[in-house]
Length: 350
Ligand SMILES: Cc1cc2nc3c(=O)[nH]c(=O)nc-3n(C[C@H](O)[C@H](O)[C@H](O)COP(=O)(O)O)c2cc1C
Image 1 (spheres, protein in one colour):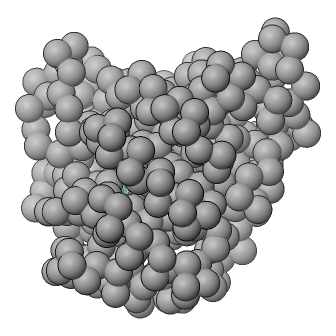
Image 2: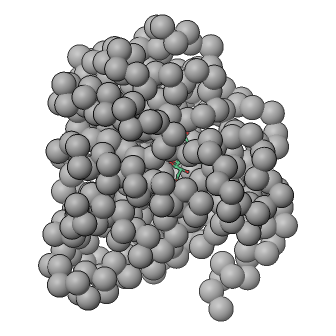
């Protein structure tokens, strides 16, 4: 039996955020110790067929940790030791924020899903920026930037710029997050005019590579609008998708009506469809995220056009071996389908 199979009932007996905090604390303890090296030996799949070059970054494998898991950039190296090929920390905001009142993170066990309304709880750019500068991460380290709750929407670019200036030295790529459902008004910033202002301001300040993370709840017309900004500004990539405010009829868990963003299995197909939609309409790399829990799911997103993928909820349900299991599985799937590498499979279904 895998260790996580034994630990999971205990973790799942705790409130979701408490369990997350416990997992986080364990990773914090092992980080930068000999145990981290042992973990890396155990969980890292080293194979040149898994390597991906995208937006100027060399990814040792295509499976990354999505934003929100390490909001304060405290455990990127421990996460890399679990075999992930990149780690996206944050969302970081200009102001330190407590986030919404607890409880604000809910398991939908029967649905293999989570609903969260964290509300960008984080230590703030002044604390996280210097912390990032002390990190020497063995895999690409992305910084996800959110908007402070207090910052007005019509001058949001100033707030994003403040954060970027503080995290710029410590990140390998930067993500403008305008798609979390838990900061009032945030997703309105996905319109053409606001996106141009925010992304253009960061670009002028030297943010590169710069990506934008989109919501799965955008209409097709709104996605096309956002992509026109991506093209106009010659942005470096698109992340699809964030959590969803939809509640599919298939949800059975008692927590289905909690307010917030839905993640995990129930958004898997919707996220893949959006990746395909985006990849068909732009030449920039797409980072695919939403409901990945196994190699087949990761492979489907890659074939739909994702250059690399990320996950959060899958780590909660499958445990710390998930990156290794997916990477091993991907190698089998590549062999089965006659691809020489992941890069050959990107967009194969388009
Ligand atoms: C508790 C929690 C917190 C999150 N926080 C952020 C965040 O701060 N910024 C962001 O862009 N996405 C955030 N996300 C969204 C994830 O990065 C990801 O886009 C989403 O969960 C879908 O992937 P998954 O189904 O693999 O979890 C968060 C997700 C969860 C579950």
